[in-house]
Length: 154
Image 1 (tube, rainbow, N blue to C red):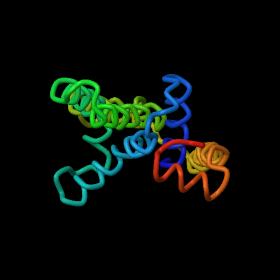
Image 2: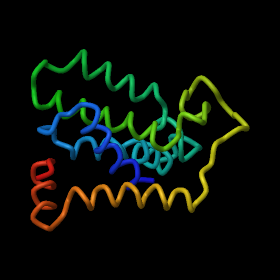
Image 3: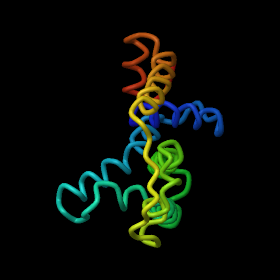
């Protein structure tokens, strides 16, 4: 689901916010940060479940509040951190995490029996859609290098 959420997060950001100067690398990193957070916590045995705190809406909203309160206005750091948070929020929507109340509203609900699971073919199709979008936007090696350096499409 990483390719799907990353590619479509970039598409949604550009479509909704119309900010073509934003460093899209932070949207992409944010879009798979819930997975990285949960894998880290699971590997170091902080949580028993490989999908938990990182996929919680409260973590994303909490991060947004902390950034808005403790960062200085009109700075590059704040802009990039907000892009990261937007990417994380898009991940929660695009990965259908909102269908699992136990995960999405962690820690309010614990041990729900009704967990939404997506089939492998659907995951492959969604990843293909996200990958095709990124390939369409990054047409050649020169564009890829520019994107990796600047975080923008040519």
